[in-house]
Each structure stands twice: as C-alpha cells, then as structure tokens.
Image 1 (cartoon, one colour):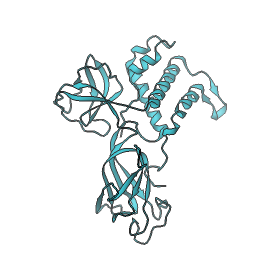
Image 2 (cartoon, helix red, strand yellow; image 1 turned 180 degrees about the vertical axis):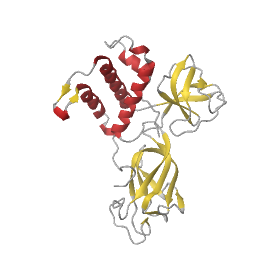
Image 3 (cartoon, one colour; image 1 turned 90 degrees about the vertical axis):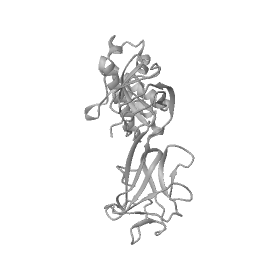
Image 4 (cartoon, one colour; image 1 turned 45 degrees about the vertical axis):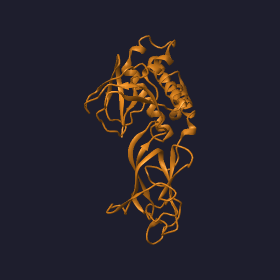
Amino acid sequence: MATRHTYATGDDLRDYLAGTSYSSGWDADSAAIRRILEASSRLIDNYTDGGAYGPVTETRYYDIGRGSLINSPQYHTLNSVDVIGTASGLAPVVPLDGWLTSTTTVTAYDDTDRGASTVLTEGYANDFFLMPYNETPKTIFKLNEDSSNTLDSGQQTLAILGSWGYTADTLSITTADAVGSTTATSVSVTSASDFGPAQAILIDSEQMYITSISGNTLTVERGVNGTTAATHSGGATAYKFDYPVLVVQACLDIAKLTFRNRDMGAGGTIGGGEAAITTNEAEIGSVLHTLDDYRVTGTSNGVIF
C-alpha cells in the first residue's frame, strides 16, 4: 500500500530554508518541494523499518513455523498436532513487522487453505495480549497461555487488521464544509492556515492527502492510507497528524540536503572505489542515525524469527 504520510509540509520547508543561499526560485517550485518531502519521508520509513509514523489501516499476515518454516515463535519444536497454544503448552510470542496502534480484527486461520478461522479477542480473560503492556505502539503479539484457542502452523495463519503506525495522535485544526461526494477532490475548510501541501489530514474516519491549497480550499486525494472515501457533514472537525518532533526535524534536514544537492551538486566524496559515497549521502546517513531509537526489529516479510 502506498503511504501518504509526509512528515513536514511545503510551508515548513520554506520556513526552514528561508535565508539560505540556494537558488532564488526554489520557494515557488511547489511540485519539487512536495516530491522532495515525500521522498524524504519514505527514506525515513525505510530506515526505521516500522512503516509510516502516521496511521495506515491494513491487514498484515504472519507465518507460524514448522518444517520448512523452521523458525517457530519461541524457537520451540511443535508437537504432532502442529499447533501452538494450550494444547501444546506453548504460548507464542510473535514479533510484529511494524508499529501497531490499535486492532480491528485478529484472526487465526486453520492451516493455509483457510477452510476455517477463529476471531481472537484481546485481554487477560481472552486470547491474546499486545506488548509492551503499558506503551503504544505495540510491537509484539502474545497468545494468552490460558486461552483455549491455538495457532496452527503454516503460512499466513495469523492475520492482524488494524491501524499500523507509530502514532495516531492528531491535532484539531479547523472545521470543514460538507463533502457530499466520495469522489470530490476539493474540500473547503474554515481556515487553511495550519495546513500545507504534502500533508495527510483526517476528517471523521477518512484520511485525505493535500496536493495544493487555494485560499481555504484544499485539493486532496481521497481515502488514502487504507481508509475509505466517504461523505461528511458540514462542521466536521479536520485534524492533522502529530508526528514525533525528531521525525519532523529529520524530514526537514533530509529535504534541505536534497535541495542543496539539486541546486549546488554534491560537495565531494568520502572514500574511494566502489565504497565511495557522496558527502550528501553521508550527511543524510547522519540525519537518519538520529532516529535509531525508533528502529523496529522483529520479523522479515511477516515470517516469524
């Protein structure tokens, strides 16, 4: 799924670059600014490997290992019935391949043919826990040792539909006029001063992505990040997402370096031969390292290690 979370707006970048010596026409090049911010944001996502920092609604699948899938959740050998749970005395701990802020449906499937399935319920008296217990986002699924439900071994036998991302925090900004069509791409708001191009917003349960602004009218892409385009009543609150401050700063720093490289060229290389990297690459790498505490470790392509 294409992610439409960009961690700084065009106006943020214009403010950040104000007074620099880059080409005089940069601040009018809105399309280039948006592309650079989008690329900077995806570079951050790829580095931290947790997905987007804002919420994306989707289903992710996990293999429960046996045989050729030799890595079972706790490195245990499964018993002859090929299940993990009360019957086998094992409670699997499944590292997730991203940040999870909330769940809609968690499903355990019967083998890989999905001939039968069980919807699991979170909680102490139910089927599973999400960990860490006292923090959000969650990065681990743990089957309750007291649950009567089990996980069958096989490919994609655990499915989690939920809101994936580091945070779902929002800031209330303004109210929107009625949106009477699911295909309309213009949304009028009371005040657009705190919005900017290259920004995801939330109205009711629908996310939209701003491509441009004229006065108090937003031109948007509808139903992004796994949400569904819907109609909206007048007066509905329009929110923007509140990303971690270090992520916002990293996005601005990478975009600044990219703009400098575009206008002035990379300032030399470090090292030699095939190992040589540009100064610009090294500087971007230094920026990304400020986000090391956000990096996710766990599974690779949904296969449990």
